[in-house]
Length: 419
Image (cartoon, rainbow, N blue to C red; front, side, top):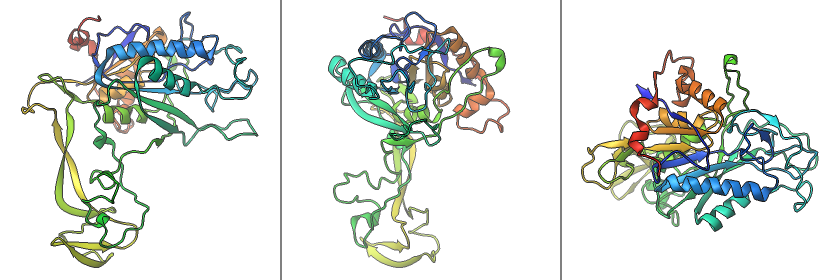
């Protein structure tokens, strides 16, 4: 059986976890001045953007405490316009779905700031990123743009419709765990390729590409991810109102790319994918260029270092095949015992991140201050269709994906007592 995530009720400013026990943090805090979640100390109810950013920095400082030096933090944060009348927050007027409790709109609260011009974006994601670097000493590695291909319309006539949100990638150290080979994308090179150039042999990169352009596993993902929003249908008997949780595809990519499935018990390192390159060369369409029968689409051929390389018609270009053959750390003994990587969402809300982590072999932990949202996350963790979706399976074709409570595995005992 696949264990479910651990759902904990708690405050993001005082996480019930020990120091340096988490491999990856992926979260979406409540947005500024948008929703009342029914908590006196809730994030997002501050009077000014400066107070809001200060509260987020306090939460991030706690994330840094529980994060391993090799870990990463990904934070999704929407912006807001400084206009009491507009009520527009992040381009579609609703939060991305993490938080908890009541969902009453804050009636004008925090929507007008005297120090920011009317109708201007408050630049909250930028302010947060700068504070993380300046005040916490974190490294801002990248900003990922969530391009919402099915975003909702806006009733504005003098600016573009906002159809994106930002995710910032933060790390404690310049060197950290990454397994981006797991999330590489198919090559789609728009450049014309000349016969005799380095691109043709599928091994040597174009000059200046530093070995990345034609990696046989695919190209690195870009900084703009086009991912559709995903509806969440909550059973009426739970009696919990909610707003759209972010799609499972977001944490799936982050979890596969920046958290280990296994952490070696001997050296404490996460095991990274090991690539095995084959001798077979294929085109970008999948046509075999070495061995096999002749393909009519190949209209020319040449010899390069004794190997037969046929020129494919159209935009196709050759590359070597490769597979991920296994996982290894720095230990010579790859059979040493291991523990699952730990993925945390300190604003767990509906439990999306923790559930996806669990269904991909990690230990997912969801922390939220709302009892209602913890109950909702518990439902998702045990619901067969939600578990199937998190595993990337067709929920209608899966009769049952077994659930098992994480506390049966004594997770907190494995992690140790909080400091």
